[in-house]
Image (cartoon, rainbow, N blue to C red; front, top):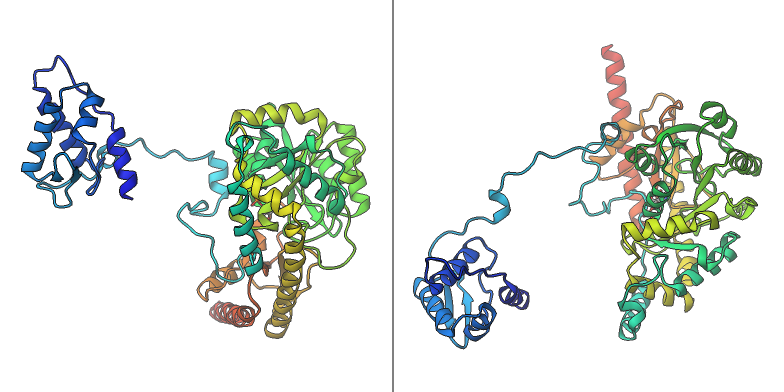
Length: 504
Ligand SMILES: Cc1ncc(COP(=O)(O)O)c(C=O)c1O
């Protein structure tokens, strides 16, 4: 802390008026005093030596010595002139409480009213840590082995960083990481790609933002899934794009309904391998229908292949992008789920026709991804730790899924229907007729259980009452007690329903 404050004092932008009426030593005195009182220089901060400050201000050293002597005599600074002066911790008058607080501030402006209205209150809480309570969504597990390897690989990579990492580089990301991601996607998801087409992003949300910036045209319309991933729809709305919520049935997004409802749409955002939130797999017939529509309409399909790394059984379909013969699919994936959300790294596989527009857009927004995290992830993948981590997590998450399903079936059998999903990090527990998922979501919170009401993820389609429940990353021993608490919340809801009925 001291180090940092010391450097600020020596970097401080002191201003002297040569032609001013006040003697120079008084100007120096006043400026330092005011920097101390406004807390720009905090107690304990070391002031530059008289020689340094005199050189910085181009004044005689005696000017600074006089100013320091007065500050010392009045108690603003302590120490010894010559060997080091520090801002006193016991000041002779109260500090001013910082510059910012005294300023008149402009009124806060809201994001577009339509999205503001669609967001839950306090939607973006920058002070909130991710809620660790079960069964919050998207929690990942970093076991001791991964944590240890991550530290070791990071230390080694950081020791051997070279000029490639310190300078500006390719806006798409480090070639070595793009190569590693490309190999992984070809092998694991049958994605058709070359490293040149991979754009490293900070995650899915960033990739979606880039897609929107690239495809945005006046009057642009897009299909989104109903129910669907709220952040995609909200990002589109925030950009002023008209979204059409297209129903999802047992085969995935209803393409015919999309064509009928919004024939002018030129983009569709889908989660084909594990529809969010229902978990439905987009059937082969629908995949072909969607690709066909995109080709004929000249539209773009944005395939969000989130959590496809965690497949537990059943027949996995390869990516939609892998079936595409017309280069109309932008494939988006994330390492923030495969590894951990704080990593902020993901990728998009961009069709060649859009590559140059993506490059320019990336360059104009954040120029390039940070080289340091990319270098670590590249090594982590190339040394086989990533694949091993996925294998271990797959086993753990599957076990957590099974423990959760068993506990729910045991404790909540009369209220819900639940099947273990073949993929992903959450499950959907459908509620018996008449039970309200939003009321249970609220009641569960007071029992320290986080479940999401699925009905809130619908836009136009008739909402189904269900709980979206994350299972990944919650240790076995935490699961059964949390389900017991959830069962209590459900009972509470049932009792209050009965009371209302009796009263009515
Ligand atoms: C549908 C969907 N896509 C993507 C993500 C991952 O987003 P990001 O990479 O921005 O963390 C999530 C996370 O919850 C998700 O549910």
